[in-house]
Amino acid sequence: MATRVRKTNTEQKILDTAAGLFHRHGLRGVGGDQVIAGSGVAKSTLYAHFRTKDDLIAAYLRRTDDSWMGRLRAAAEAAGPEPAEQLVGLFDALLASFDRHGFFGCPFISAAVEAEPGSQAHAATVAHVRRRQEWLTGMARSAGAGEPAALAAHLGLLIDGALAAGRLLQDRAVVDDAKASARAAVLAHTAQTNHTTRAPSA
Image: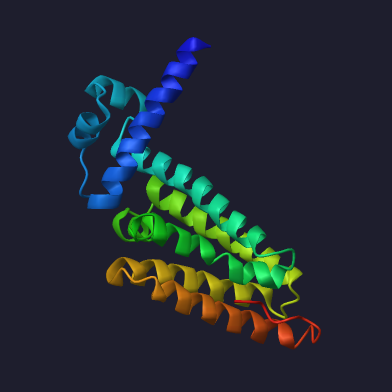
């Protein structure tokens, strides 16, 4: 059992180091030597845990998927019990991220651009988008949207666009605008099927 704990701690240290480097330099801009130097592990230790850079990137993206989905869900739940409110409130996760440390951009957008099709990193990115869209579609259905998948697609584009524009402009107003657009989209998609739906609050 102690051996497994040491291994887990080492993996965590490597992934923490890699995450910081990937944020600053992009996926392609980081090499194994940088991860080794930053994490303080031996080269053999790095490759014992992650045989290739693709393995490391995929593990980083899977961990990021769990973390980011958790933040989106928490922000949605904090907006109240109504699904329509939650679909708008989830954008507060983006605002919280910006207020903590500025926008580094979205690692999944970066991976979509930088990772080779067929790679583990590309597969992890696709899996994240599908997981997020399934969640958004379920909430849109609960909110009474006439076309839940269409509303989910609209909101997904707003999330991705806000993260990309936020990286470029470093201005939280980008997310404020995305949240306002999300509110309008939710109202437009739910008004036809649920005339009693209360307008999502700011």
